[in-house]
Image 1: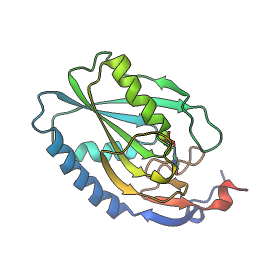
Image 2: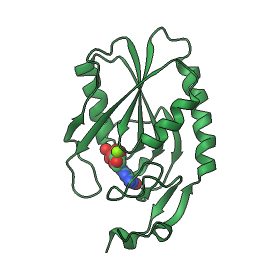
Image 3: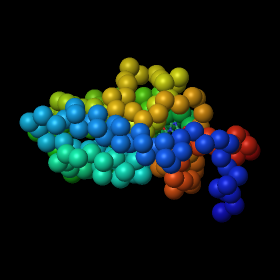
Image 4: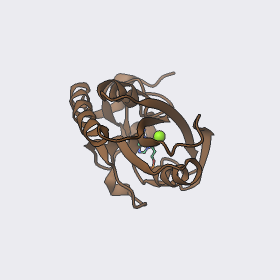
Length: 187
Ligand code: 5GP
Ligand code: MG
């Protein structure tokens, strides 16, 4: 292991404190949206990237809720995802018609993954109300008609790491989001 954490980050995009503040703000938005609903709330985290965000967000949302996770993998070239999604770990419950589903994801990039997931949840799990919550939104690269309902930060088209996001499975544990130095992935 010779990836030096300190020297890998070009620039911090979202500091630990900025993330904390934003998580509180969207938690209030989420509470306001769901508080009068008859249905139960399921927060659905997409592994592995959402794990840090999900853990912080679920503590801030003061509503009764359940959590579940899915792990998805997409066959694409390099850093760009494709529409070909494979479920590596699926949901516990089959019928989700009694739930409002809030997908919690690290980043919405091309939209291929979440566009596929929303259709899958409607088709296979009878979901009616599905909303999308992401830490980051990279709208410049969008390929599918899909948008964030509850989002923390809109970022430029840069490859970012930290707070759950990885480069080759590393850096998920950084407490902030930073731009990865190009020399690390271009060498
Ligand atoms: P999409 O299907 O929207 O293109 O892809 C979303 C997935 O691509 C995210 O869940 C994330 O795993 C990955 N991704 C997209 N942009 C970045 C980025 O800047 N950094 C990292 N680490 N992953 C990214
Ligand atoms: Mg991901």
